[in-house]
Image (cartoon, rainbow, N blue to C red):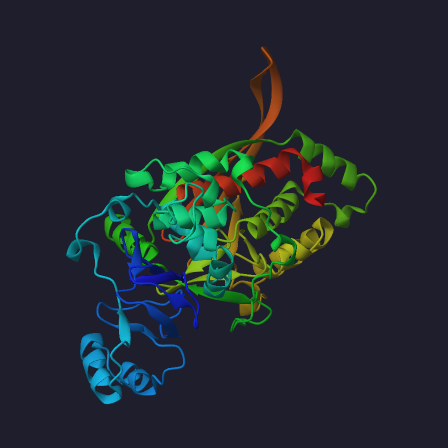
Length: 452
């Protein structure tokens, strides 16, 4: 399983049977409890890393105790049970024990926690979150652990790990909730009810000082977007494996949305009224800009599946499909999210012309993070496009046509454009893709949102 997060930090005191960590398997998030009381002396497997059954992931003992011999054993041998025996004999530390990786769902008696459903969307919140951020958050949200004191005076709150995580992510004070599960256990539905009620939320003093994601890794392709990678969760790996087996090498699904383009057409007309002919922008230029801005708000759409990791890109490098005699080529607009519509337009025109003359350099047509294929100028109303690996999605844009629509009981004519996004299901779920298209649609229908 994958260590989702540590509920305790090194040096913290631990009680027997207290929850010290959460572990993600391919099916559920499970609590791991300490068998003995003591102090968490060392975390060997940090949050975000995977551990095999029986592997040593941490050391518990007396505060200040020398655990170097046990640490040496753990680093040289994966058999945790034998490590524990040898180390105890060498150090004669009766109260020192090792934390064992939890049993899998099939090997452990089922509890309410283990049988609680975990959907793809619920697991996603941890996939985009950086492991170090999980470790930083956990100590500050002690009201979200199973040891929090409740208002009824019994001294403990019983909280499922999914509920604890949802509470931490939505800033919900668990002490103010009454659990509806067995023996008053706070479960998922209690958090969902509390999310809609602001009375249960606690102020987030860290919101303004939140550290931005660190895009430190540099692509081999010249001028391509910098990126960061996060370990793929066990759930995400299983989803990718099963979908690939079911559908094909890239398990693809499609989402289509209708967009009213009247405001964009008016914006384009106004922008082109005062510029030279060669500086005029097209609807496609505006679409590229809006897509780039939308991608920065939905990082899983601006990413790629790398088997063991998911690669998130700092900038939106948009590939724009251009038809040439031999087929199709996609010149890339680097950092389109940081460029104005006029600059995007000039770059597309320049690279499209060089593409038709076969004068593009490799770095100009490789390494896109997202692609757009527009066949609207050919009168195509709606189509689906094939994803260009390793990108996670491609947007197929149709023509904006005058269409009668119903508004407030009346039939009026609007310019409607259909767009269909092909999504790699290994990294993009249905809700994730839908939210991206929702943002994309809102910006095109209200271009003023591009300024916000």
